[in-house]
Length: 113
Length: 112
Image (cartoon, rainbow over all chains, first blue to last red; front, side, top):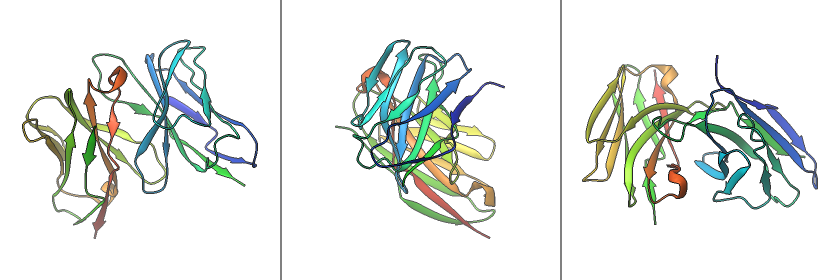
């Protein structure tokens, strides 16, 4: 079955550490997205990519970095510059045309310890 | 600018009908979609409306009025498993690369 896989499900980070969240999709979707969700809040866009080797900043990109070396993969690195990284991180993908639904992964819950 | 407004919480009784409203303000609008998210889970796509009117999919229906910049999600024969957060999302050519903008979500509480 096609879908999006995020790993790990839970991640703990020490102060000053960089951590990388994995996102892999086998839906042959062109576009991939990273969202951050805080308790009781909506989804805020961190970064997105529509083609390999190209990505764009979203609304809250500071303290995060991404890469898109393969169509299937869009890892997110939470750097030490992100001062409040504790949140639920969601990866999504979509076709660029003809399909208006986003498919989401099951999320990674990041906690700073 | 752009904005989406939806109630933060709605409460309904099992077996009843509930409507979750969404009003939006944007230029270049071309569609409204709805997503369901259970606690700790991934949002799942429910519906997409590009034209005025009601789209029905089983117990869920979604409505759009472009002239009123308004839409709603209608859930019928409510079941306890429908307890979740529901997000409306706007598609607009005003958004760079046509990416969608999500509302803050409506938490639906269902009473037995």
